Image (cartoon, rainbow, N blue to C red; front, side, top):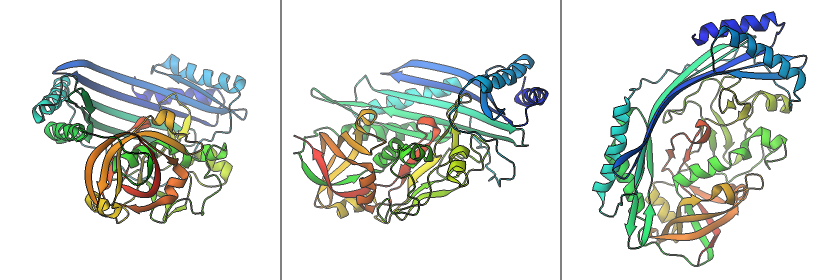
Length: 450
């Protein structure tokens, strides 16, 4: 049974149950993935996921139920179970069924090539073989991976909303390992887009350059250094501290930005944007997990907090419109808050090399590790294992390793003195969001070394 047929059965059952406020959210996806270890394919998988979640407001309380089957009996069970759950479960906060009337941006489904299983495995092998060919120091434990995902999302409710979207992309990644004596150094590169536009040679070469550039890395003395964070690290930091900009976190007292709209929370050279329609992104979304129209928004503009990210519940509590950031991590997941394409905008500092000149002497940080343990999204504090390069007299120098960078994310935003123009948006991370930005410079940070 197709979704359209199942939807009508669910809506009929909901009306028969006396419900007036309800919503059906569904996702369908197909994925194919392949991995290599050494010269061989080490893993391959393919699968389909189909699921729907029904939620209703019954006697002033919210109830949920989900299914992976599109059948007449499941349509009736879904409504019955959601109503029962509303009666017995104590849910936190209120829920709202969105009214029609939003102005939705028309997002065209991407015209993509659907690779066969053989083409996807061949691409993975080509990447790892190109890695070995690029440098003799790349060893047999190197890896690569490929993934194709095609998805469709539907949302219909009792108010008259009937929305659908679809997306598809191929992602390819390189994980080369270079050996120099007893030491090994890992590199990484990943690209996403249409299958025919992914260049295995380029992906392999970038990963290899990342690995071999670390050979000969030395420790640095503990001290206070001027620091330049790479555009890759910018994306990592925004992804790690996403909850800082969530209205849900703020309303629970877990973000220090609560109630600070209109106040200065960052350096004047910092603008942070969530753009659901970013042309460089694969992640173009016209409506969120509650049916609210998404929109371009500056979360922080010229250092001032413009808005936190809201879903319908947090927006109602704050007395503001939703920003269209009510997101479901899966069809059966509750509505949370997440951006789509969240990035720091260019700041006029120039290319990466020109940013080195502005830095003068310092450390260029290209890698952060241990963010799950060394970064606290509530307090903003971090102490992270890092790697990168020395910068001397405005020029990139030798690699450095085994040091920690410490600070506080809230203060870091205020201490940024220059933002570059070497902007990059990374492929989708956890939850499907994309993060990015240019490199930026902070003066006098604490570095723990030898």
